[in-house]
Length: 59
Ligand SMILES: [Zn+2]
Image (cartoon, rainbow, N blue to C red; front, side):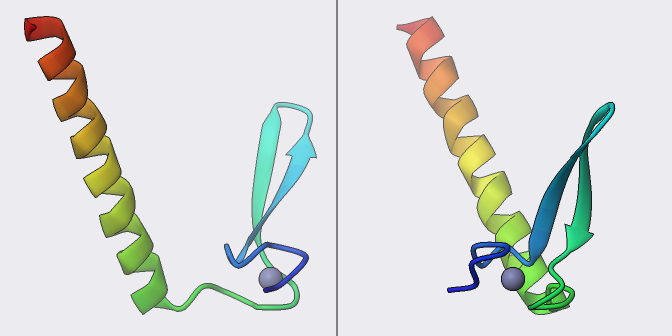
């Protein structure tokens, strides 16, 4: 696995007001396909977290 981005294709550089996101200099830009897959996964996790939250509150 890439040691610069850890397989994320993105490097987080701390800047004055937070983080600056750059494509990994070693891996280059994340392929669109990978990006969509990751987004889908992220939204799935958010949905699941939200569902769990609702369960907790209604219980
Ligand atoms: Zn990389």
